[in-house]
Image (cartoon, rainbow, N blue to C red; front, top):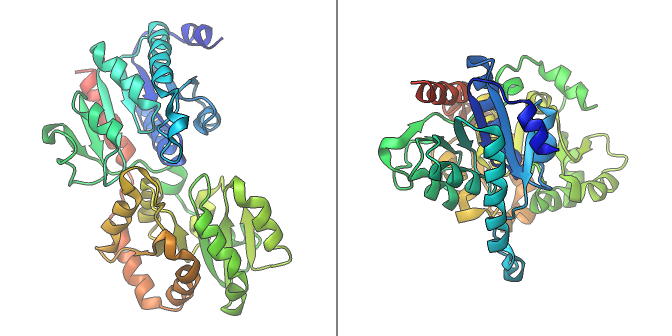
Length: 375
């Protein structure tokens, strides 16, 4: 069925394969790049390639694009036994990619990170098809480092990336941010009422990433009464695994809005006076665009500890605060209360993080790809 759909959509013109996913931090930039390319080339065809069972298989079609899934998995750091089948899955994924390319015939392939991007870009490079890598983090992932050596160009969020990629291939663009966040024109009062809260109270937004963050959730759950005591209210995005527990914990608390996933992040950012967040690249890029004071709690098991590297980049510029995952239970809520009461620090953080905001990253990436493919 997938092959038939691809063949039916085959027309003349540019054909872009966009590979990667696993988290919103990979998926949303990929969609933003596709949208920007479509603006430049309305006749272009697009096919996303992700991993079966991962969130891209749902989010990409919601954005109006076709996606096919590979039978592939990433390296499991917590259980070595679960990695036994990895070589088989990798070989199988190359055969799947071969079939996809035979039908779709891409003129260029774009990788946005996530383990599904590796076999797709590696196969394209072997076939001499132009490949483009987008590295969103301050510390590059291993797959992207390997792919970057033979890529046509590597797009990065920050300038200090020559230790990971050939310097002459690096193009600093920033990270693509969702269009509704870049073009946000929502008032704070409207946004707060959208979540059923009180516009007269300071509002804290907690976003633990698209899959949730256990340490953040547990720290907030333990101290929800403190928010009421300090006249603060909370928009609490828990992720699916913690949602029922959080919903039960916050029952009857008018100062807490609990949700497993926030589809209207433009509303959430507009409502927030300050934010608690993991420090994935996508979250950082969006927070810089909307200029929000933020306390980061980096996910400690991210590859190469890149979330800590991401957060430190901002902390060192006075653009954010950071609390380690291990210290969240004791320090997170007191830090939130202290920051909420410190208007001067909030203003300074807003100014500094705002300097890092890039609103046209997707356009820069799309223009570079389009010009190189059509040169």
